[in-house]
Image (cartoon, rainbow, N blue to C red):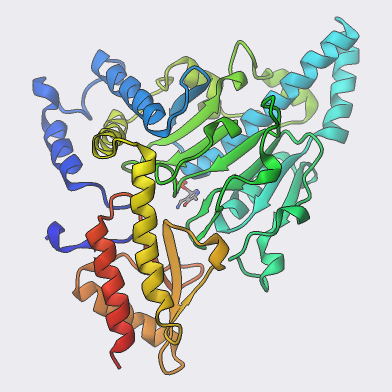
Length: 424
Ligand code: PMP
């Protein structure tokens, strides 16, 4: 039964049982309305309340100001956000350049267009720090949408680790563009178990708050650690790991990228500049203006995310710091057990960048890794420890230590790691 299992899958991940129990009732009859939460109109007042509460609870839990940041619910997953970040932030760049040229050249539209074309050709750059499989995919998507000539590879972690991910290149070696439209990184690489230990110093804003435009994918570590939200222009994450169920993706966007501060360029202008035109469903401006209800949003998924946030807020008086302390404790228990048996276990990423969320390791006995890992997974499953198989692209073992894994679950895994090593 559910109570016998600790599920370490990388996403979709386990959800708190009490949230699912409440959700199962809400699916049949939401708050005595006689209609289930997935049946109510997304335009109903109750749907709007669910959206607004989830937005407010997210800001409260992560401690950012809703005055400065908009929370947007989207539907195309982390993968959709790879594209959305390109479209929206390149759009914002065009819009800034356009405004500056209007000041300089007045209303001479032809001159403005010619100057803008030149700027696109010579100055437009988007910067990617590639530290694992997901930032690599985002980088490739940017190349595909914009053309490789506009996409600058700031650093590729494979170049310092024998062609494999597992380290983060020293910031002194990063090749940042001058005034990039944005700098992108993935805070926690789910497949490779690499997490940025802290916000990169070279990207930190100065005392006046001026700095690069930073975008981060936090799909697999959001809500698990304190983040300096003010250092980011855009943070996005799919819900299906630390927040809720698959089907809703969240973007936290600095309001200066929305009207009236920034108005996205029109389709005809983008066409003239040879830049890609975003599908309307990926335009933050449109979705934000409609409070995430431009089209039919799965209110059920927002409701689940909202319930998880309420549970987190009720559990931890010190909000994300409370969850961070638990995540660190669980991770150190599991890493500690692995480190105690270096003859059997090899932790994949470098110690300085080990993820607290996705713990990736190899298991070898008698010189045989494949067979040993198979028997590790089998013996773990007998004890109810499931979902431990590594990503198909890299193999090995991966224990995803998301928020819903209780401390006892991590303890059980750590004990098993010891016992398996000791058993002959
Ligand atoms: N970014 C990261 C860090 C991820 O872990 C994932 C999915 N595991 C994605 C992006 C892609 O998300 P989705 O499957 O929701 O498109």
